[in-house]
Every structure is written in C-alpha cells, then in structure tokens.
Length: 336
Ligand code: MTE
Image (cartoon, rainbow, N blue to C red):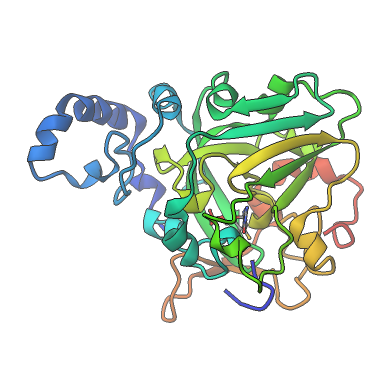
C-alpha cells in the first residue's frame, strides 16, 4: 500500500454467464476439450474448463481445487449489478509487497512462488491445532463464488468474483476455545522467491501480519479465497489461500497465508506497526474518516484513466452495512 504513492477494472455483472448456461458450457467444455484444442477457441473458452469469464488466463489447478469446483455455488453473493473488473486489471494492478512495491511487480515476479505443497499452521487457542495441508484444510468446505467490492485504502477499487468458503467454517473446523478473542494471520516468508523480502528499502518487518476480532472473523461475509474468475488464484493475488474482508480496506485481506493463530490479545498488524496514525487495526471503509494525507470520500473504480477517471462515492463499510452491528457504540473516528 502506499506510504508515499497515490495510486486501477470492469466487466458487467450481466457479463457473468448465468449458471444454467455456464453449467452447460462446462459440460460442453469437458466433453470437447481435445477437439477445442485443435480448433479456434470460442471467446469464453479462454478460462479452460472454468469458462465463466471472458479473457481469463487459463491455469492448471491442483486436484483439491478441481474436485471442489464442480460443485461450486455460483454467484452466492453478487455486487448489486456493479460491473466486474476485467481479469487483466485485477491481476496486473496489485499490492503484494513481498514481490515489490510497484503495482505491476507482483504479476511480473510472483510466478516463481512455490505453492505446491502448501500447508497452514493453526495454533493458539484452538481445540484442533496442527499443521494442515491445503488439501485437508479445504476438504470439509463447499466452494462458493462471491462477487465483492475491494476498496483499497489508497482510494481505488475493483469488483472481483472470488471462489472459496467462509472463514467462519474454517474456524469452526479447528474449534476456537473460550480464550480466543482475535485471529492473527501470517503470510509466507520466502526470501528466495519473494524479491520484496530481500529489499533493503522495504519498511515491512516480515512476515506480513493481519488480524481480526473473533466476531468479525465469524461474520458470514469474511471469506477465505482460493480462486477468482472461475479459476484458481493467480500467485499475485495471494495463492493458494487468502483472506477477503470486503467491508475493510484491502490491506486487511492478507495473501498467501501460512499461519492462523487464535489469540487472546489484538495482534500487532503490519501497517499499524509502520504508521499507526495512518492505518488502524479496524480499517473499516469509512468515507467520513479521511486518511491523514488524502480524502476517503471517493474512490477510482478500475479501470480508470485520465479521460475517464471513473470516480465514485465511497460507501460506509464499502456498502456492506450488515456489518454495522459489529461496531455498535464504537467511535469509528477513533477506532479507524
Ligand atoms: N497481503 C500480503 N501478504 N502482502 C501485501 O502487500 N497487500 C494488501 C492486501 N494483502 C498485501 C496483502 C493490500 S494493500 C491490498 S489493497 C490487497 O492485498 C490487494 O489485493 P489484490 O492485489 O488481489 O487486488
């Protein structure tokens, strides 16, 4: 995110193929992949067997993903008719400081990240601690697609169709004890494959850490994503497992998670540690509380350019007002 930089996408929700058509396309695709390889591919076939969206780069998905995808519940949550950001923008305008501070660096550098095998350490106040392989972690959960707005604290936003399962289901799987009040998340440290972690200029004390209060983490909107645009997550978007908290600024949505700890005290999070007067623990999207160096009243909805800046009003809780009860009685200017 930026400390010094100011800082961009869209496809109509109507461009999302209705499920019935999608499913029949899927069947068609599965049945005719070999043939299609020999012929000119139709526009929607760019996503390989996951041909839901246009212009999506195909990807080889691990078995644990493919097995679940077949039974995914499509468009379980939608963004009220807002245009979905083109795949190209969502995957080439990123914040993932482990791969560099530039918006294009994650896409340029993340290809070398090793995501197989992958495991997540679950520890702290839980009945079932341990190191879980991604396969075991994902196995109990049905996949659903959620089309969420993503609002970065830098005042740009996107609309992204994520694939995954509720964070609450994962937490129930590991059985938090009564002493657990917060959830702490940690990203991989891999200096060999993450050039941003070797940089002497980085302000970040690795690993990247984020956290939620347990009731926030249990809210039905808090989501663990393993895919987007009908396919597995690209590395630059946080493969193989990332958090998505749509009512909070994007920096809370930590990528490439290797550790989840249930803890009694609020964890010290990465951006809070760097600039506590600029980035708070709660980080709820709030158009009335400006960042000390810029307004949060509006946002640039990507794609945006000089001649079509596409500036829209920012909404309280990024439009997810159903979370307001979590903060009843709290002064949100003080707890930003
Ligand atoms: N997670 C890690 N590990 N490292 C990061 O630098 N950047 C955050 C968040 N998660 C970040 C991260 C910020 S600032 C934003 S806005 C979102 O990821 C961007 O997600 P996207 O690149 O998929 O749009």
